[in-house]
Image 1: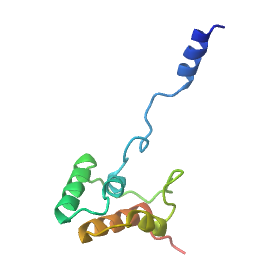
Image 2 (image 1 turned 60 degrees about the horizontal axis):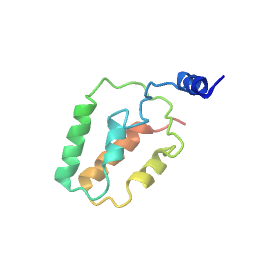
Image 3 (image 1 turned 135 degrees about the horizontal axis):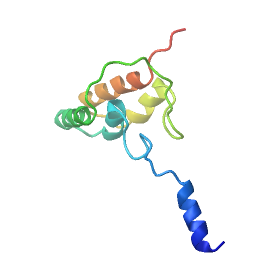
Length: 110
């Protein structure tokens, strides 16, 4: 086989479908967590919230599923708060982050 066949084989084996969350948020809560940076005032936090809601319209609540946080994401509520609350100065942004972390990591029944 020549090198052109190897290149063709490599491209044939690579899936070209984008996986949700690889290149951006896959739901409203991820949108909030990825876009609230900490220095937003109330107006900016509200605009980010509206933009995330427009991008991910409200849907019926589903049963909580196991969260796949990826390699670098938080794996529970506390880690989510610690990761995304750093430098947060806006009450509005802090409230949105808290809600999104709780939605991503619901209370576990013991």
